[in-house]
Length: 525
Image (tube, rainbow, N blue to C red):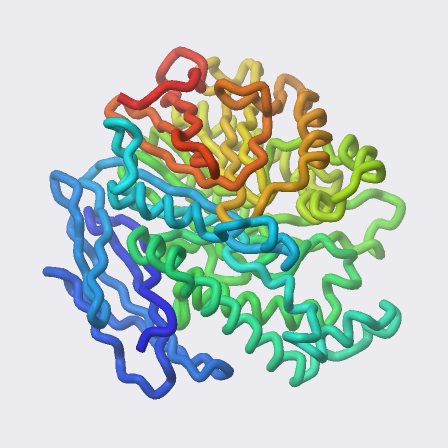
C-alpha cells in the first residue's frame, strides 16, 4: 500500500525527450510497486529506507519522445491510472507556479475553511473540468514550486522534538556550546519524514503533483524559519548546522528526487542546488537561496559593514556561465524565492513597532533582498539580468513567493547600454497556495510602502504596479499563478485568487515587440 505518491519531477527536455521522475513511498516490507508507462522505457533509479517511519522511498525515471503535437501520456502506479501532458517539439511549456504550502503557525489553520482549496482548483483547471466561459486554461506541463513546500515550524514544539525544544529554552550563552545530540538527531529525522509524508499525502496536493511534473526549490521554512539570516555565531552553532544537514537530506530525497546523484539540471554538484533548464525557446534558472546563505563574520574587517551572502561567487559564476551559453531564447524565467522588488525594509521597520500582527511580517522580511547586507548582491543580479536581456534579446521575468500576497513588481532601466525594448524586467509574486495572507492592518502598511518608487542605481528604478482593474498593489488572499504561452510568443500570467471566478491577468511580450512589456488586463485569444 502506498504511503505517498506518485510525485512527478521534471528532469529536463533534451534531444526532444521529455524526462520525468516518479517518487513513491511504501511500507518497509513491501515489494517494488508496479509502475508502467505506456510505450515508454522505465528505469528504477534508486531506493532509500526511511528509518523512523519504517518506509521505503522509490524513485523511477522515464522519457517521452516529443511529437508534432502535445500528448496526454497515461501511466499506472499499482491499480490507479494517472496522466501527464507533454508539450510538442519546440512548444513553449504551459506552467503553474505555487509557493507556501502550509502554515507557519498552527493558529493560522483556524482562519482557513478549506486548506487545500486552491490545489483542488489547480487540478480541476488542469483536467479541463473548470473553464471560464469558452476559455480553456491548462493543462500545464511543468509545476514550479518556489519555496516552503513544507513548514517545519512545529519542530521547536516539545510535542514533536522534546530535546530540541529544551535546548531552545536555554539562554544563548548555554545553547551555543551544546552539542547536536543523537537524541536530537533522531527527533529531527523523524519529524522531517513524518512532515513530508503527512503533508504531501493529502489528496488534493498528491493529485496535482501526480499529474504535473514539478521543479522545486526550498526556502527557509523547508529548513526552519529565517535560515541563513541569524547572527554568525548562531548560524554556525552545532545544533543549527545539525538541523540544516537533516533538512538538506530530506530536501534532496523528496524535492529533488536525488539519492545517488543530483539531477543533471543542477549547475553545481556541491553545497548548492541551483538548477537550469532549457525548454524550446524558453530558459528557466532556479536560484538556491538557502544552501549557501549565511551572515558575515563580525570578527572580519571590524568597523566596516560587511555584506551577508545569499549565493556564493562560485554559484553565481556557474549560473552566468550557463546563461551566457544559451542562444535563441525569447523568455528567461528566474525563480527567486524571495522577491527582488518589494517595499523598503527601512520604511517597514519604522512602521512595525506600531502595528499588531507584526511578527509574521518580520519573519517574512528579515532576510529580504532589500535588507542592507544583501543590497550589493541584489544590485549585481539586477544589472546582470538587464545586460542579459539586451544581449540575448530575451524577456526576463522573475517568479517569486514567500510574502503571502500576490504582487507585480517592475524593474526599469533608462541606461544607454540597455535598449528600450529590453528596459523592463517583470516580477510576478504568487504566495501562498495554502498559507493565508497577513492581517489587514499589516497589508495596509505594506500597501503604503509599495507606493514608494525605489532608485536601485543610476538609471534603474523599481516599483510595485497596481493590479489590473484594482487600485491595490497587493492581493491579500491565497493564490497561485499560471503562465500560458500563445502563438505570438507572449506569456499570459494568470493569478488564481481564492474567492475569484476569473483570473487576474497580465500579458508579457517578447523583447522584440516595441511596446510596453505589460499590457492591460484582457483575455487570451
